[in-house]
Image 1: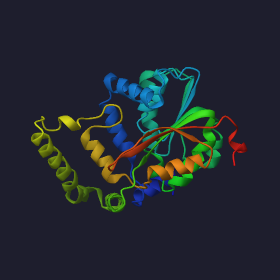
Image 2 (image 1 turned 90 degrees about the horizontal axis):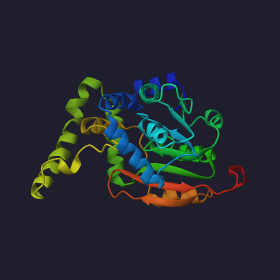
Image 3 (image 1 turned 30 degrees about the horizontal axis):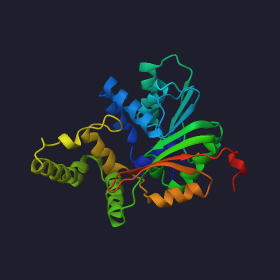
Image 4 (image 1 turned 180 degrees about the vertical axis):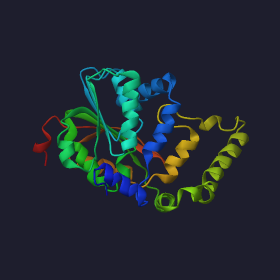
Length: 287
């Protein structure tokens, strides 16, 4: 479980209990261009059914590369707050602010843990709370989901993406991810390179059988991902790792007064995407 400190993050990575996501995001920023930023804007606007965020405050929980926070800025949010537990990810968001909004006081970037309730309490409330593919990497997923609820302003939106529960397949991937983080770095290619190679070969054969140019159906997704290699490293090493069924997430939020507005279900090993609406009454008044 996260301790919410830089030293805690360093110790977890050194002990093989956490993957250093921020290092991969730094590699992604080298390839970032206006086309990818535009895709991020379109993806975010589509997810929340809003072409502008004017008049709204946006919180990016586990901001990673910072590209979604940048998209929220471009969509006109009155205020954007980004935070991450990984110091390298915090650096990524700060780099994007330096590139695109160096003097803009609307964008705050902080270092903190979603498991640190004192830190969260200091952030205030937001019209949009966004956490895509983050809360299942905390080591305490249900606690993390519960912790973000008071951050949503009455009548606001909560957008989250949580790994799909595939039963034994998810358990197998959890073992792979934990092993990846514990194996010495120099030995990782020998142990884990065959996994992406097998999947990529399978995809290439499928493309050929369908008459497609190999990899055309699986090109980089500018809206969310890094290049394919960094995506694979992110997936193989993504530990801690938890999963949930769509009905589990929906039930958890409904029991706390949130209503499901949108569900994009995944039938494989990816993320189920949810958009919930907070009730108009204050969080403290909910049962």
